[in-house]
Image (cartoon, rainbow, N blue to C red; front, side, top):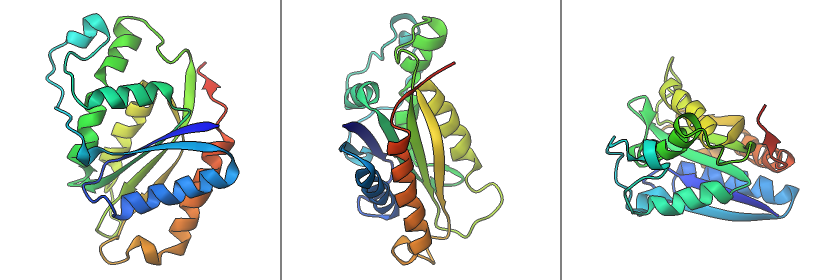
Length: 198
């Protein structure tokens, strides 16, 4: 059984990001037994990082809110899906606040010298969506953030699903993109045996 954590970073609960996640999950389920925890970040109460440096000394965030659930699921997951729309060339606020609140994992690794993931690098997929036609640099901000984020939470990227031009061409009418999402899901399970970081 592969435990998949899927974080939906869009305020649109039934929008393109959710559809893309569901198609990835459908592909994953076709390749093996999966247990899915899909979390809609917009429904959680997660305060922004206060840059207080508390986690530098304790390895934990001092704030107690719905981020506690995310921390727990990140520790327990075998595979990861993160989806977020692009607003002004960066990921949504709902997604970015969760990324920033994962600072305790950075503190544990680089300050406290603790390997909280025991060398595990779980397979992960990033889904990025945009309403406008593809233009130079449209997704670069989100991709830079997600590359660092995956590194901090013990995830090895197996691919990104980049979906521009959704205002004019909704995902429901894009069979090639839906097929790519499905195949990424199959790869997620195919890479489900966690790698050890070297």
